[in-house]
Image 1 (tube, one colour):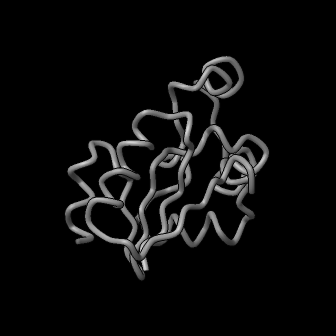
Image 2 (cartoon, helix red, strand yellow):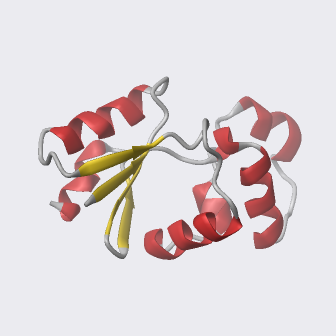
Length: 113
């Protein structure tokens, strides 16, 4: 089973979903803006991605630029900020078992198939 953390308003996320749909019917979509992630879910994603919390942050988001750019936060603080502002989470993220890939560019997802 493939899971895709998806924002339907994002073109890169839509491209990632299309890529998954063209390769399997066994997937589920997690719209994390509608159903925000909790601390444990983010930590599990980070482990599967092999990312530090700041690596998962979308630094081009307006809220990042206005409120967080250039500031130093602990890993726990970054996780809290992503929970409070789920738009800060990079997308799409595709998970298969214990492996997750940030799907930008979409071709990086090939390792899961």
